[in-house]
Length: 257
Image (cartoon, rainbow, N blue to C red; front, side, top):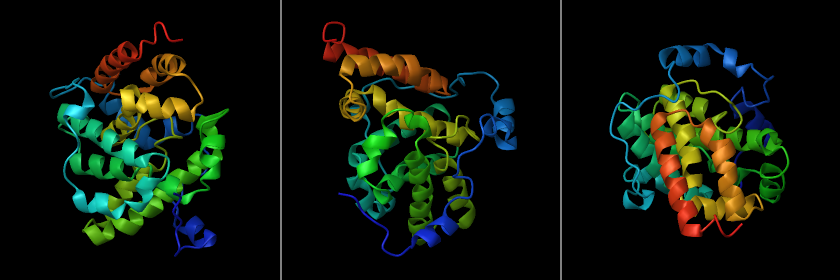
């Protein structure tokens, strides 16, 4: 089911969307002062964990808390398997917050819950045809879903007691989580890593491989080759490698290819 924003016109959407959602020139984000400061604060990559790292199957530690926020985005959970992706990614985000206790935990968790809600407010027929085919990383619909996700955050968070500064920090991360190649903060990095980590678990492989039209063996090869190197934190790398080995073994990808 694809939900639509009944209250905002396209013109209003354009005015309310995060101002940086349009495509940036290659390398522009890396020169952003926020990206430069983050790189200086965390020069070692992947960033070493400061706390415990769990590599147990993610199903053993489901996410908890923020029930009011979850209830507010139920309509947005019914598009593009968000009802699977968002809770699983949030469970990974909780583990990453344990590994990096210096991060703002509430910011990370609120953002990961909201980060893909924008998929419910774009043309659903284009999600697979444009968002997961060809040069999918640069697909216009990916920029659109980020902007729409910011609108969802601005709609639901004030009523839950979050102030404007917190909401702007959430939107700064949502806006670019798919299309920007660099992180602007540790919280940004944790959200980006959690968003990718779900793909390595058996559930993520089963769902995502179908989006890309790949068999599981081909898809897990792609994860190893393309997605694993994108992870920013050492904890995420450790989790991803463990999950990938576990998933490949379960699906017998050494034979079924």
